Image (cartoon, rainbow, N blue to C red; front, side):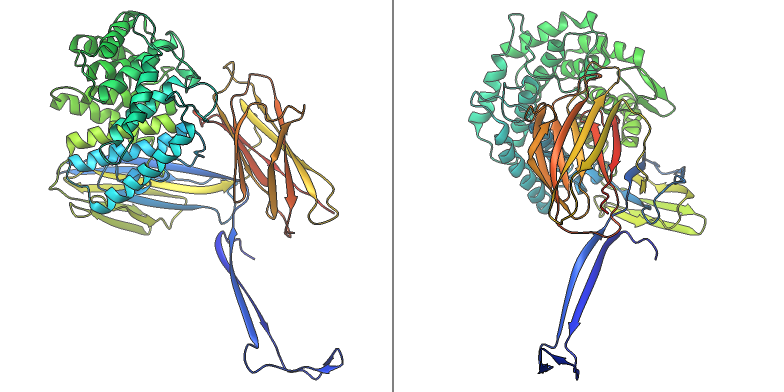
Length: 586
């Protein structure tokens, strides 16, 4: 029997037939009506192992000429039979892919205050862009504002009585998250009703966090621990809050803003941190402080990573460092370049090199790898798209491989239309040719499953299920251990994504450590369908943590396959690993 993955329909029929056999001393009678009963149910068949996603993305601007790219799509030798699929998608707008997936730019859980904002805020930037370029339709407005309204209501779960916000809605308010909410709610007011008192209270709380020199004091965890290095975290926080206030059109003469800028100017010479330098460049661009802006751009030029037609920055300075932090840093530089009283042709050429690199980092849903990189990148790309928008041009895209040719047309009438076609050849070499005068976003995406990797990783997980399996309905204990032995003292917030065995359910109320300390480090637990998501505050270097979840087998499944449990750093998703756990019952 061949392997079939996907949704299958299972049909079962029962029919009453005439028979001479006596049943309980009675002759079998067959009704004239209702003699046949048929039931059809859908069954989701998923491939075993770990799903992998690979994307190849380009922003191609032929400008009346012809541009071409080539890519080889390959599969690993151990790919799970029947799991591989691939497609090519074309759209005539740099933000079109994100517009199509406004509800899910990231395939991550969003049960915390920051992830909710990361779902909410891209809607604002896309609405602004479409409005500025006169592409906003009533249907798009209704859909995007619907996401804004629901996100606004959800965010109230993370609000404190003093007007601040925190990741899970308890403990002390978080300075950074409160500023993130302030800037997003302030911009969202243009599209939906937001209680002005909520915005003012968040602003007042932030102002109360200031030190005597005008800098803001960091309270709560800085959202990405790899941003640290060479600068006080309060400087980064001050730049972020000052930029937020300036984005909301607070005058530079406002005492809070002017003192914040003064505090930042006093430390610029000491800043060695690339992330903070990029954020400062954007802050002083918003403030229209040309001299300080140029000073910061000079520092950024010295550490820029140039690769042909693309340009980006990273925290480590390594050209291979294409992580979420590199995306965020490069996006802040792009924002800074485009935030000026007059943007020159040279500025746009420079910006185009950054965009070329950013587009290559996009995932299959139009987002990036984590929360903040997605938010800042889409803000920067929407500003860029506004600057280069053209309303009267078209292009054709041809995708070829041996025996497989696909054609796409992009024009003013379908610029926002997401066009996707399945690729029939895999593995194969493909060529892409674009002719015309408008830019097109092209992406090839492939999805496949492989056996769960077993090599050692800095962040690792191990799992085992135990219990007496003589009777259906018995309880089983799933034990899992998370360990971190990387270079940092501790991780950022960590997500444990548990795929339940087929036919099993879970009782997460019993989640506890092996030592009996109830929910130690556990910030939140979510259950949906066949998954359990556990949010862990952090994992300290070389100190394993062990947890237990109670599961129950409610349906016996023949030839039961192992399930996968995955762990990853919330802000550095490349720090991740998977493990399988088995269930054997004789």
